Image (cartoon, rainbow, N blue to C red):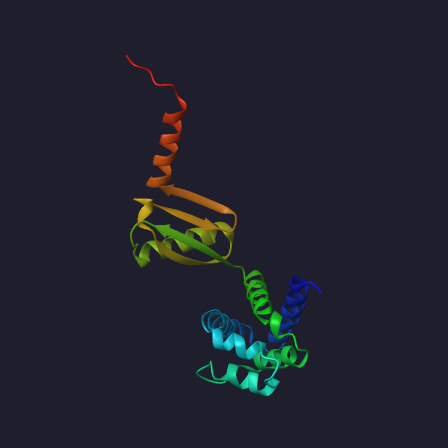
Length: 184
């Protein structure tokens, strides 16, 4: 069976279950924490994928990741996944859930790459401007890359704005390189 199909079906059911229990935002935050832990902790992945450990032992390991016990929606979902032995798809299910949540709540992710760090005030203004244009809430992740020399690169969905000096120099090199040399 197709991994994407399994993940999207489970995520859809999970989203509806969390919504029916009025735990959507809490579940979303817990899922994000679980994704981050899954990415960074090899031991967690090994435990969840282990055929030797019981479902209850796996669930106990996941419970220990959270400062307080996870919500009933997440715990119920994890029990369902473990009972049906779908652990190998869990990471994809969690990602599908976050994408579904963002779509339902009109949240978009964006990336701002700058040559040097920018202040929070600028990022807040950029979030407001992008949010007003897209009629959604925009979350901007920042990166600093000195190879841009100056300016910025902004990416949101399929929109890319490259206002970096490095890109302008590259364009200038391309334009100058395509014309024959004239000696006067």
